[in-house]
Image 1 (cartoon, helix red, strand yellow):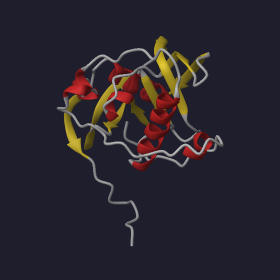
Image 2 (cartoon, helix red, strand yellow; image 1 turned 45 degrees about the horizontal axis):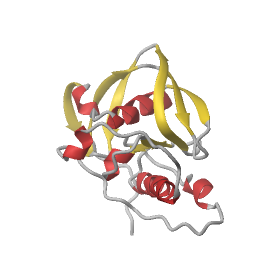
Image 3 (cartoon, helix red, strand yellow; image 1 turned 45 degrees about the vertical axis):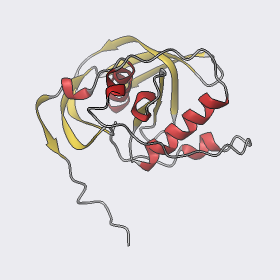
Length: 180
């Protein structure tokens, strides 16, 4: 999901294991990997940890608030989200409950420069495993609820563009500071 990113990656990076993270290529709409259903994660090994670290780094670099594994070409049920309160890592997530409704602007790192109006639940409760394979419950309202729904849709091969009310439109970031 497109957003304005943060630098919360340091919370994940400073594990003392000298893990090197790398930016991954974000797959864009039309890539068949984005239309496939992802497989559950069976265990957390070094490759999984590296993938999660790479996903966080890639999400922050792209100024996103969420990223799902298929967006970097990996058909695993892994999502990372950070709406500004630090990273949330979801392994094999499932939506348990939703309520309310919100309609708002939504974008996606896999559909760069575009956004549209999408209606989502205003409250979402999610069950997922953490990096130690312990079950966790997460609750979110507003932007976090939207991010949960958006990213979990990716795990089932669904793009937000199918939910857009009206037309997609171009997004410009004219107010952002330019690099010198």
